[in-house]
Image (cartoon, helix red, strand yellow):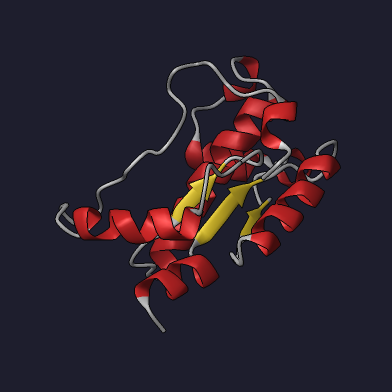
Length: 144
């Protein structure tokens, strides 16, 4: 199995809430199937799993007074996905929010990035995101 095959089979984690985001779950399944990408929905940080012990393991006491359940859940899912990456010893991993879209062939773009990524120190995180704060509308992304 190639590095790309391993990454795209066992190294993609998607932050997801269990309720209210069924549309995203359906779209993710279709999108990732189309691009022949495996993935795991990370839902362990969903509010239905909140216990005082879980929250206090990762956050200061009374964090719920500062952050909404949604923000807390998303943050917790990110932390838990990083724990999964370490526990599974993924050489590479990709972490998505639950609303990804691809411009072009994502697998090919990963292949193009790996030689440069391999030059980075171990444990380095590369962030691929739209940092222009100008996000495409739903209608601009439906052709993918």
